[in-house]
Amino acid sequence: MPSAHKGAISFGLVHIPIQLQVAVREHDLSFNQLCKKTGERIRYKKFCPSCNKEIKQDEIVKGYEYEKDKYVIISGEDLEKIQTEKDKTIQILKFVKEAEVDPIYFEKNYYAQPDKQGQKAFDLLREAMLATKKAAVARTVLGTKEALLLIRAVEDGMRVTSLYFEDEIVTAPAKTASKLTKAEVTMAKQLIDQLSGPFDIADYHDEYQERLRNLIERKIHSQEIVKVKEKQSVQAVDLMEALSQSLKQTTAGAAKARTTRKRTGKSLS
Image (cartoon, rainbow, N blue to C red):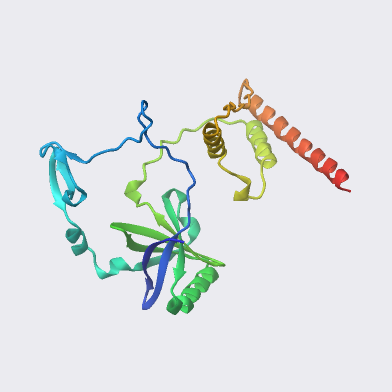
């Protein structure tokens, strides 16, 4: 598993050497741009209009545009100078109740893996956090970017989530209140009850990616592309009618599932 960051968790005088390992592996397919006529892949050149030539990688520097067409050059040495020793550690700032952190701030997820010499201190911190039911808010630098982290203790280790800062979150639209009848609320609650169940991520998968992979395989083997049949939506007259029809559909679906299970049970006996 690739390491995204090597450092140490620091709180008080305790120093725990760890590394952060990426917890997510995306499977989305990507496409290349090709020439329509020849089928060759399009290549992009890094070109300087003033020099009127293609520029090599070692001739390129980073710059920040502070005014239109005006840049200040920022070198790697400049970035190193503004980092302190603490930037290399994951410094715990405070312990909080996990429920206090709105998921809207969640960005990326990592596994925290301790070095051998830090295993005992790591286990101690994890057990203490589990016992107190607290999560830790910490700060570090990931790459060249300062990062705010939420560290959560779980039975098999620790999960670390990078957080967006407050000024990165767009303000929610103004709330608009609707007048609801008691009957509408009751029926909506019934629909929620019908659709309720335990959460298991294995129940869900990316159906679009499956269809896309199938399409690509068919194109590779020159097979006919089968158009996906879409479910027809029922046009409801009003909110109450929509809730009523939804309840009927979920009830019918549940009854069908029970009948299928009974038939399956009989055939197996």
